[in-house]
Image 1 (cartoon, one colour):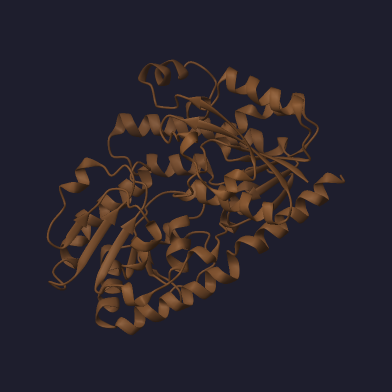
Image 2: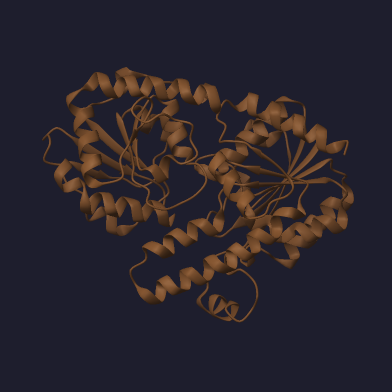
Length: 400
């Protein structure tokens, strides 16, 4: 089975949500003897030096990438208003990148070509013109929904109007593309329902975030208590917005619970404003060298998302590390978890306060929730069982 995977960023190293999902997909398919070729847009925001990639998975695939400046440009955004294109998506398209992809398709034949996310869909016409492969689209998020929810929470009216404009453009584009593929993969059941409501008439299956449990070794002797932590990319607007809300509305009361309590905040591209919150009880770090070790050393994971879509990879990782997760309903959306058993749900400052107080005063409670969380993700998110099911769908598509 020859598979070409298109990505809007290089999934090496697998150190954040999107790269982890793509990396584990490739790793699982390689185990099933699929022949994988990867074509990645190497955007300026998350640019990777290809020469610095040392990874056994990387060594087993054919790899091509193209550097594109994907940064938001004021003039580009302005002139885009007068076009009929989505600015969110068009920034990832380049004619030279399309020509490179065309050359790859002329030199090789593929059975399956998988588009990982909406931002590589602008290359669909190039693929259709140069390949007879079956086409798969994986929706990592309902992209327009992310922007719609951000707009709804924006207080500054001009910015809210522009975000609403972007989300409308994105919704039109996203809806138009769904039925141009032979197969669509949603990342969660709520996203599947939303895709159906968008008019999807093609084959549709759910493939949640899959992880390799060999990487997630729990050592409770290294876990300090009482500790809270938040881990996530801070240049992703929903993360930034949610953490600001938690620090302004909730943390001041939490901080008074115990002089020994520590709250650790870490993530790549940490915004300068968060360092202003730094105190004896609140430790703000930038990107950590080893996210798994960072999680292992802390007890309770805080995920105060107020907007977003898809599935939170960091929650899946936290559950794999037997962390007690305290998250908003929005953050836990799409994860097959049971509140009070393998996760704690909190949507208001009072609910967060009560949940954190419960964990601090009843240490056995957070440990029990963490153990249940590990069992849940082992059941639903194992890398090779998900890869086997995906491979079976590839085989069925190939004979259509």
